[in-house]
Every structure is written in C-alpha cells, then in structure tokens.
Amino acid sequence: MEYFAIIIAAIFVNNIVLAQFLGICPLLGVSGKISTAGGMAGAVLFVMTIATIVTYLIYNFILVPFGISYLQTITYILVISALVQMVELILKKVSPPLYQALGIFLPLITTNCAILGVAILTVQKDFNLLQGVVFSVATAIGFGLALIIFAGIREHLDLMGVPKAMRGAPIALLVAGILALAFMGFAGLV
Amino acid sequence: MSNLTNFTKGFIKENPVFIMLLGLCPTLGVSTSAFNGLGMGLATAFVLIMSNLVISLIKNLIPAKVRIPSFIVVIASFVTIVQLVLEGFVPALYESLGLFIPLIVVNCVVLGRAEAFASKNTVFSSIIDGTGMGLGFTFALTLLGSVREILGSGNIFGMNLGFYPLDADGNPVVMLVFVLAPGAFIALAYLVALNAMLKQRMSKK
Image (cartoon, rainbow over all chains, first blue to last red; front, side):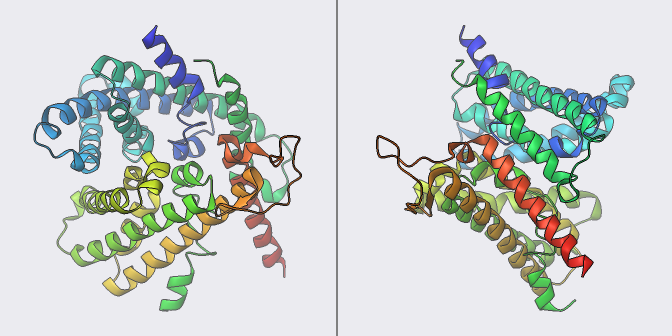
C-alpha cells in the first residue's frame, strides 16, 4: 500500500514536469513528435533508475559516514555525468538496437534537472533503497506520460491557425499550463 | 562589442528567459512571489558571475575534451557556497526555494554562458557578461513572480494591494490558479508572447 501511494503520487499527483517543474527543457525541446518523446522517456527511465541507486549508495555509504554530506551537489552531478557516459558506452557494446533508439537522447540527459532532482528528493524524503527505486521508476513514468501527451497535442497544434505572436514557445507553454490544470484534478488522490 | 552592449544584451535582446527560453525549470518553479523570484535570480546571478570569472581565468589550462565536466565542477562549487550561505543567513528563503538551489548546477543559463562566452573571452568582459545575464535572469524572474503574485494572491513583495473585492469571510477574491502550477505556465506563455509581439511591432517600423 505504501509503495502504491508512492507510485500514484509520483505519476499523477506530483507529476515531475507539470507539478514540480523539473525537466521542462526536454518537454519543450523534444516533444515535436510522439516517437522522439517516447525515446526520450525511455532514456530518462533508464538513467534515472540507475542514477538513483548509485547516488543513494554513495550518499549513505560514503558521504554520511565521513560527514561530508554538504558535498552532495558536487558529487551527484559528477556521478550522474560519469554514469551517463558509462551507460552510453555499455549500451553501444551490449545492445546496439537499444543504443540506436536512445543514443541521441543520452548526452542531453546530464543536464536534465529531473535526474538530479529525483536523486536529491530521494535523500530529502528519507526513502530506503527500494522506496527510492520505486519512486524513481514511477517519476520517470510520469515524465514519459506528460511528454507523450504533450507531443500528441503538439502534433495537432501544427495544423492550427495560431496567432503570430503566440506561435512556437508561447502556445506550447499555454498547452502545458492547461495540461497542468488537468493534472491538478488528481490532487488529493493520495 | 562594447562593454555597454555586452552588459545590456541580457535584459531584452538576449534575455535568457523570454528570448532564449533557458533555465525554465527554476523560472517556473520558484516564481510564486516576487520575493522568491528576486532571491532565486540573485542566487543564480552570483553563481553565473563567479563561474564566468573562474572559467575565463582557467580557460587556457583546461584541455578541450574535459571542458564540460570541468565547468560543471566549478559551477557546482559555487552552488554549494550559495546553498550554505542561504541556509545560514536567509533560512526562510532557503526553505521556499528548496530543491531549486542545488539545481542551479543544471541551469542551462549558467553552463550556456560558460561554454558560449567565458571560455572564449577575457576575464573582464566575462564578468560583464555574467552580470548582465544574471541581472536579466533576475529581472525576468522578478517580473514573472510579480505578475503571479499580483494575480494570484493580490500582493506584491508581500504587501497587500487591496484592489480585489472581498468575499463574505473578508478574504480577497483572487485568481488562485496563478500561484499554483498551471498559472506558472500560463503567465510565462503570455509574457513570452507579449515579448514576441513587441518585437514584431518594432521590426515593422
């Protein structure tokens, strides 16, 4: 039940993009087509889960015992960027089809604040390792959900007569606002 | 490019938020009030100026291949300093900005200026660039924060404006949605559109 609450909260109620404003850049950047949005969502799911596990272990077994938890930000960002590089290399070797599918999105992920955000949130919320993993997977699903819905709407938006000044970013932000309004309907679910 | 245009370009012409759409996560996340926007803007500006300064000093020592990780370490160090200072001296602001302070590390504005400007220019012009961009970011955040605070809670910098009608319980009738998540997207959408419209008008003349 406790895990169920974490999952529902992370996907719908506190959706990482629409309620917590993390990962807006990929939302606006790669959401032109549903297929690219799907690729990005897959890459985020992959990296976010691994990053949460690794940063959790480093935080609890290195930073806390040595009393240097104030170095959290520096350590995390280094670990995440090293991890992204490593994942890229391993994927290239082990699973070329998966690399083909995720390839171009992986380097972009280092600067995706959702990854660092989830790693820090796992510590802030005092999750244990299993809760942290469940939380990060659910958050990534929530991210993918928002991204794919948004991409679907934007594909249709291309055919609409949008006023000149609203074209491009403004209309995309407005759509995101309405989508966030819809997601607010989930508030109070857990 | 003269120092003056270098300084002022961050406000309107190359404003990181309204024109270049960089650093949107903190922009949307913390701009619930003008004060939060100002605080976040100044924290980012400090990191931006200091990282521009250090990176332009050491740009010749860093091998091109490990340039991005080195930049990130420099930026992360200054973010940690900001984090500790805010926690010690302005705990209220630290509480309300929360997660977004460590996330200055991945703010594209900071890394973007390091890569696009500080790694190619002199120390002095990098400081000017950092100050201009930082204040432009602060300006954008404060503006968005003010709009949301006025529409969403009827206040500005915490002071009651008092022009909203009161309901039966004596509370002002405000558009609460603007301090909530959707309001951030909607307010920013119209500010960006306004900017685009002004630009079109100007280019017609």
